[in-house]
Image (tube, rainbow, N blue to C red; front, side):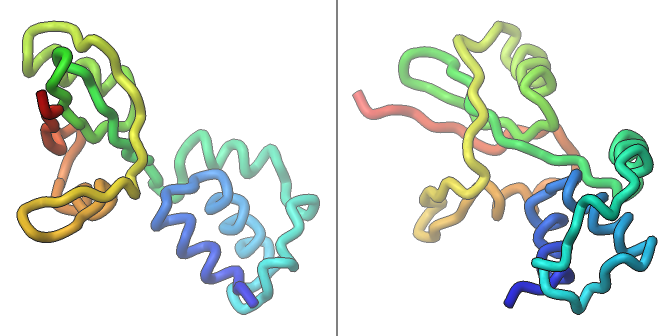
Length: 142
């Protein structure tokens, strides 16, 4: 059994703003409780206009940070944490004084070695206080 409180917590962990705001609204309206099973979550009970306004004004302060892979040349890539692709490209251009060859969103749960430990971008993101920020570099073998 999955409780609404567990789903709500996951919304903050994975930065799912829409679902978090819907749950928040339904909790405020006392249409569900944190101890209810997730199957009791009925979006038809929500005032969709109110929730849309809550999302627009970001009442819960969820600002999703993604990781982007920007290609520097045929071998080298830089990974940048940013709120959007445009923000990642701006930081790249400001830092390297050129345009990237491409820019693609990467998975936050992608794991890699840092020294002898295995970490993910989600783990690394916790080490930063503000965004955008350079998360790291990767070079392909020749």
